Length: 386
Image (cartoon, rainbow, N blue to C red; front, side, top):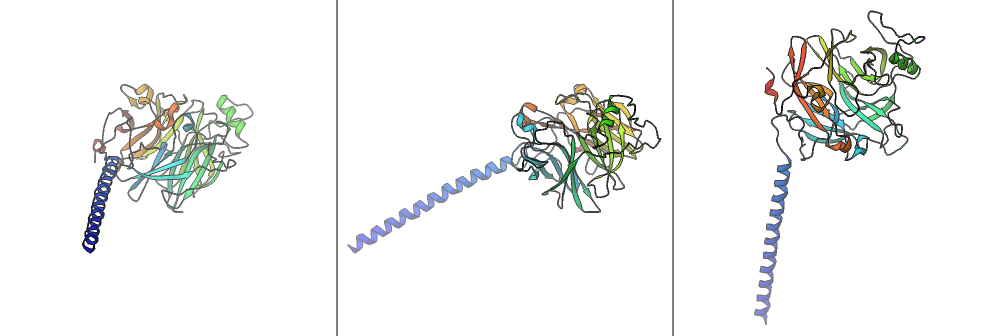
């Protein structure tokens, strides 16, 4: 009886140990499969492939449309509109997404930097329209400031406001401060004192829109923010029913407007501005106004931020140039470690399925003070001279 009891215990022990061994093996297999899945998600890029799917560190197509990039302490932070599937994705259902990178090829998902609000009375309520977010760093206040085009919930594109938010860290979280129309009761500044607006007798349709909005502030839609070498920041946006660009000076803390601004290319319907500077010359790339459909890009240059700004035509060349290769400008980024070299960033919109929007990044070429952009199926930073 005692022997049978011992044998029974031994048998049970062996069965128990075998089950543990099997569980360990199965667990190891599951871990290995998960690890392989994680590694495969972390696709490593060594080049740009415009218009193709571009996956983040989680293996998900980057979700930062109409975006801009700010560099801080050797890390690049990409902010853009977070889209969802379908046409509903053209409204703000989530907020502003942030990604980080040290090489511009591979991007880490940093999450939602500025979430929409569940409070339907908030300016940035879920379902409002938040477009073209741009973040700049203020060296004096040590704050990261985000500006964006804002349309209020249920108002379509009638509000045409500028929104501003602030954070202590580049990835956020950003705190929404306010939204409004810039420069109420302010007339444009002109160094030469010419081309002033006569609201008693508007000279054209665009002047009429300007005068109409003078009391409450000017319309502000597609936009960017530019920080000059002296630390002053400027807000550039489509105004006057998208007929004219405004370039407006921001306050020293970058959280408001000083009231000093100019109008650029009056009456010519320019949007999607992207401004940069090289060797003392200011450049700006933009587009015409054709909704979500692509159109010829346009570029301008000036010797002073206050102009005059000269229209220079279409910078794109070759096949697809007449439609900006299917995209629309959003930002121009200085190439890392390549002084005086720049990357043109554009969006290829997919309004029927917003989340599938693609990114077109292409190198900008210079010939003296003229720029050109050419298509490339694939390229890397080695195209720039050192």
